[in-house]
Image (cartoon, rainbow, N blue to C red):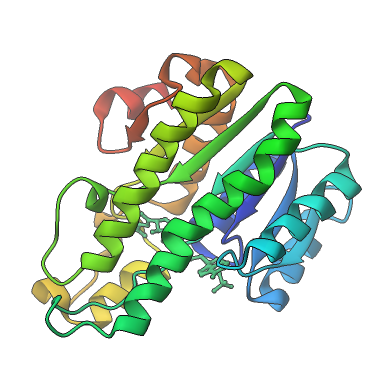
Length: 244
Ligand code: NJP
């Protein structure tokens, strides 16, 4: 499709699959994550013409801005930002959560999303077009016991999508959120290992595959999803699953 996409959290899980899916659809991708070896390996797999690895911690604005500059410097433009990087944060009740760990989750899941938007928007506005997709969560819409940092940060990120749509919807910027459901990635393994929800066995067959989430993101970046601009889509929604 000739698009240039920048994907945060592209070292594994949903972000890595999204990179593969965008390239399979004909896009070129900038791959951001802290694990420089993992993004370099993935860029090698996807080919130097199609992928650029950019080590980046999304909680630091100047690193995100440098990554956007590297993407535009290499590929000439930026059409799609996928705000995917995320951490589960401390799994502990409010009375016991470590304040530093709590803040770090906000720094990645909420400030990181703002950093992506803030760095990409000037480029997209000057192009007169761009799509910003932000991974949200069911946790954005209702509290889970012991997950306050994750829920609060995802609720904030969902509000950023709405703010972006309100401010820039008429400037050619397509803002959308995606709540992917329960996806078979390291993050779910981490949740299981923490013992929260009393889950002792992870049955991956009951999880949505990261490939499916990736396919949905590619679909959202294209014109078929125009009717949903400004919305947060859920892969638990049968209608959306049928369309993708
Ligand atoms: O998680 P995981 P998923 N700067 O742990 C990166 C949401 N979600 O793929 O930096 C830059 O396999 C990290 O890279 P690295 C979830 O909240 C999931 O499941 O090298 N990148 C890695 O590539 C998240 O927003 C489920 O460690 C940073 C990636 O983030 C998104 O989906 C359900 C970073 C995490 O990979 C992807 O999660 C749901 C930083 N500071 C929403 N910190 C689910 N899995 O069930 C982390 O509703 N990363």
